[in-house]
Structures are given as C-alpha cells and as structure tokens.
Length: 171
Image (cartoon, rainbow, N blue to C red; front, side, top):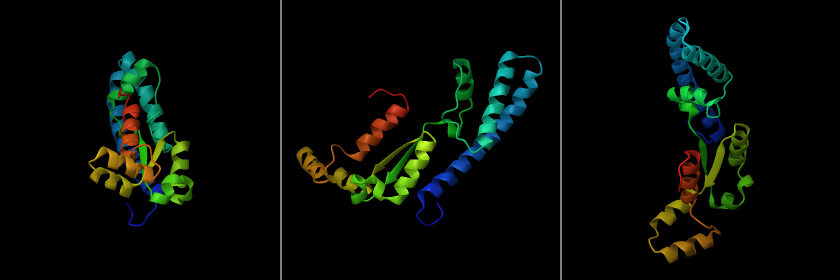
C-alpha cells in the first residue's frame, strides 16, 4: 500500500479506510432512523441502540465482523451491509522456507498475532509454489511436486475450504 513491505501497516491502513466508510454509512442511517424512532416505533428504537453500539465500536477502531446480538438484532445488523461486518481472512504470501517454519517470517508473525487478537483467520501460502502447481496438469506429477515441498494439498485448496467455512457454505 505504501511502497515498502509492511503487511501489518498495510492491513491497518485498509481497515481504517473500511471503518471510515462504515462509520459514514452508520451515521447516515442513524439520522434517518432517529426520526422514525421519535414516533415510538419499537423496531426503530431497537435499531438506534444497535447503531449507537456499532458507531462506538468503530470509533474505538474495532471491526464489526464479530458484532452481533439477538436474532432480531442480527437481521438489522445484516441489513446495513457493512464492509467491516464481512468475514475476514488474511492471506500471507511467504517464501518456500517460511512455508514450513511460519514463525521464521517476522511479517507473518506480526500479522498472525494481530489477527489472533482480532479473532481473524490468518493463512499462509507460497505464491511461487502455487503458480508452479497450477501449471502441472498430470495428477501424479502434481502429487510428486507437492511431496517435494512436503505438502498434502495446494494452499489454494486450503484457502477455498477456509472461505467456504467462513461464509457458512457446505463443501
């Protein structure tokens, strides 16, 4: 994002931009719903409370991907279609050596730690290996290539399974 390698800083910059966009959206929604809540509409009153909670979290720099409440609260929250309310996966591109020793990469360690604090999944894969795997058509050759790097499956398969899981889809 900034021209040099610093994944944690880049993630934080992107998250800040998403938070600002969601904050703008929530503030606009709050103005609208406050008008209808004055008439005593129970659903509007409930939404005003949720909006105020969500705005407070965003002002504290918290993503809303884990923001939830009762089933009726969740329906309201989903209706906002927030950018920071979506499931998040951090995908780290590491070199071949770091793939088997993830904590050897300071960037991966920093991002993994940050992700864990924020209840976000962090997955690593090696883009170079994935590119090579994608060029191999023969199943046996692909299996042999994976064995060379001591891998059970391509990282892309792990990413797909993780994405399906985060989205609540059945594979």
